[in-house]
Image (tube, rainbow, N blue to C red):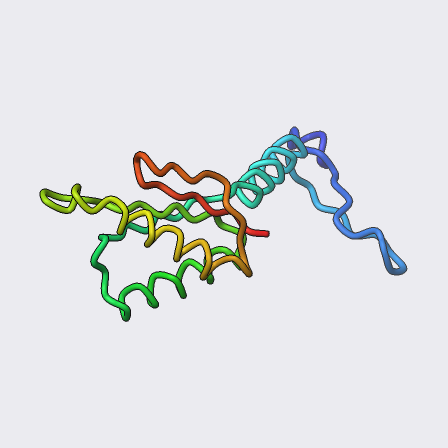
Length: 125
């Protein structure tokens, strides 16, 4: 019956008294399984943009979201954007990124820390 339809007889469940089988295209089943496995193994990078004069409440919200993402297994990229006269105070931006590293030290480790472009990438522990 399966050969007449040009399909394969695939055993779905081997346990129990009688094995359960389906008539389906085995190549298509393998392709879908590989596709699902690739999607689940991809790590995503979440991005958080900050300003050097960010308020405490906004900072806490961004840190809590980053903690959730890191616990889920995603990487988090922090970027501090400077505009106009803020370029004179690059040390404040670097201090902010150092503060992020200290606050997220329990759930992450630093992958890259570029002080020149003010980008910090954290990966889960």
